[in-house]
Image 1 (tube, rainbow, N blue to C red):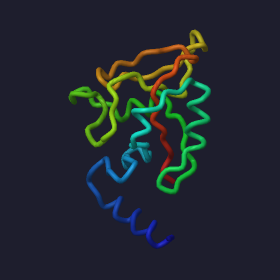
Image 2 (cartoon, rainbow, N blue to C red):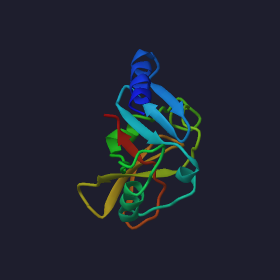
Image 3 (cartoon, rainbow, N blue to C red):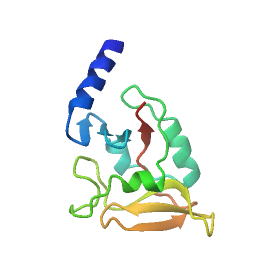
Image 4 (tube, rainbow, N blue to C red):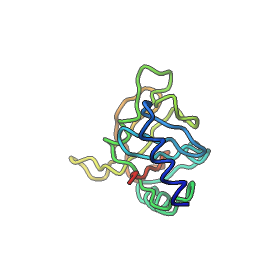
Length: 139
């Protein structure tokens, strides 16, 4: 297993592409992030509190260290030149608001998020159920 991981790391570092698509995930090599990309990102709605629990309990492609992305991380996968504002490497896309772990400073009852259709940054109440796309750091 270690050898397979080593081969994966070497191959990833040789690639000139910023994103790599695999089953259930998209790897952002430039920002060293791995993104959830399965059917659950267009089916499940979570509040601010349940999103944290959902990501922390996610096991995807053998990884268990998933978390809710920050607003800055979520903005790294936005491409407003696309029909849907999320980068086209992602297969599962809901043109809707996706929540983050970033609270709105002026009123902590709100959370920042991004509309994947327009790329617009907006805020919603933490008690509202929103879509979530978990992320993990590539070490």
